[in-house]
Length: 298
Image (cartoon, rainbow, N blue to C red; front, side, top):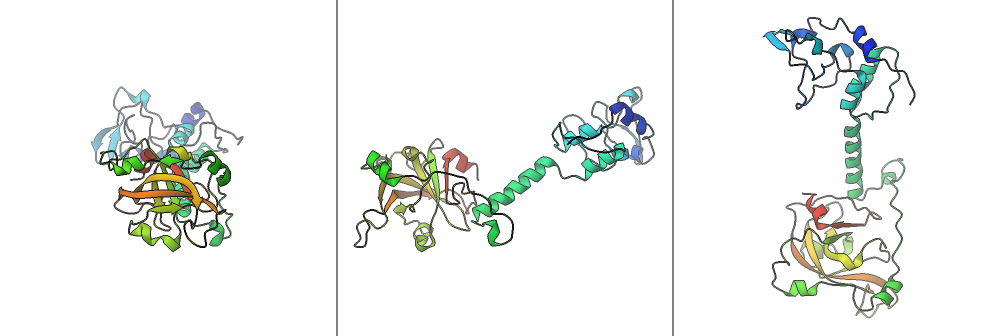
């Protein structure tokens, strides 16, 4: 934005009469290491710059500037209170009267606060699998454009297995039950038709759908966490084997050309006391992350 602003000298002249009884009724100074006062939507009630010492209390309704330090007392400028409200330094405010500048900034929601509230709302909606157009006319949140994995080419590259952590599960080494924060974790949405085995932790195999993101580093996968729709994640599994297979392998109606990723898994532990909603970043179905990042959800 391009707009008009007033210099600090003009600002101070405009409010040279700020020492009225109401303003002097309490301390208006916070130290550099203290949380500032709420930014007022009025220049006449603006807090004073922390370069000055805290005002001296005379009685419950009367404060004065510390004698001999009067020259240090000044109101914070429009630009300074804008920084407190986390506006970018290059953001221009358009006003004629300097008090309008204070009013705009004091009435505004702090920029960074608004951003983090909005992002949390978005994460919560996406974690619940809510696509905005289903409940309103708001434009659908676009899923990231991620290339689909070619299972056939993957099978040529890894005819037997992609990952083999089975030796970890079979051993009694402390590594199996202790968390490895440096290891990769795949969080995957589980379908309603086989959700019970994840609720009672009896799941031994997880089959992906026909589509799987090519961005996941399959050869680094170590842990698996099932995402239960409308609940989130809670339980941690070890990926014993990761390979290319088919959805109904070993069954009479198996289609030998219906390739999927197959994860042979084993329950390790309940990671959280309650389910945690997290964002499924790829197609609202997968999140490729690390154990360190997962622990940050707690």
